[in-house]
Image (cartoon, rainbow, N blue to C red; front, side, top):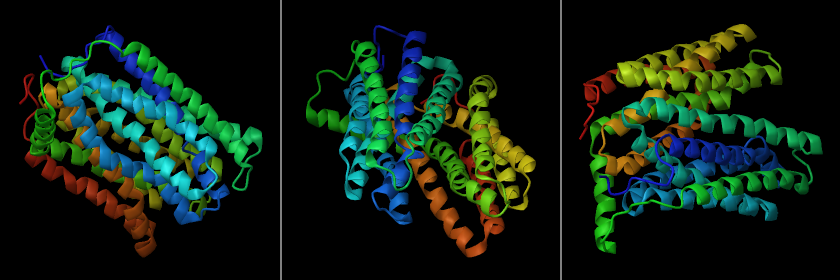
Length: 413
């Protein structure tokens, strides 16, 4: 038996449903405090464009720094303990926003709040992989879709609350604090549910001193990071996230400033992509469990690259909507299979480290996408910039196929 698999009083399907409920509440809470509330709050504190970008992006830096060690720590001290640390941040950090009056404090709180997803995210995925058996693709995709649903609902509800209160870039700080309070209460609900349902059954490594635990921690990271298949598969997700981050940042700008669409239509273009991904991921995860993960990842990269390259050449709402839907489908192909493939290649006792490595590469891609694409757009314009990113997606496929030659076996390394 794995030394660190969680065996709470609720197991199998019950544990999976619990993780989905907690994940939904936690992501809903996190999204309430992020968009569009966070940029407007930073502006109300006097931040310029650069400062707003830092406030939004600093939590991703937290993920880059802490996801891998958090996952590896869970392999040594137990998943439940590590998840509860992350849930504590989800439940407590939003209350700190209520006392912010200066921009520097906001950046510090955002960095701390990023620990929530950095600690809880990879460990929760490791637990899902623990209980999924040969249904990793399907169950990881369902878990991800539920978390996406929480994010999808949190952003518009936060914006609507601000709208009802009449807040804006120069709004009263108390109006923003009403949304942060709602975020805090929802995060606290996720923490309470975690404390109630995950309180029993953790089985960390027993009889080990600090030095031995540190050795296991380092060994887990080393073994996972040395597996080229894990790195290559994670890199495919990271590269796909470069295009997703770029689309998130520049599709609305292109739609309004170049294509001449209104703001609502620009929002619809991004929303339809998320909805398609949300719906398609569980089905694609089930397909990957049955027919293999590698073909879906390759197909998904192509489905993302083609519409991404075409977007700067489209100007009407219908064609841009279709491009967004195809991109969302491609994203579902890639993301439904990549995390499951990483889990396939690892020993169960290293699932935490594997999901940490995967999450770190994911965050690097997501964070670098807007930055790299922004530089390319400024230097070359939308058409060449988007074409280069699309070429990166397609160019990554041969290397992936060369390194990941075979489908994972039922009893991997």
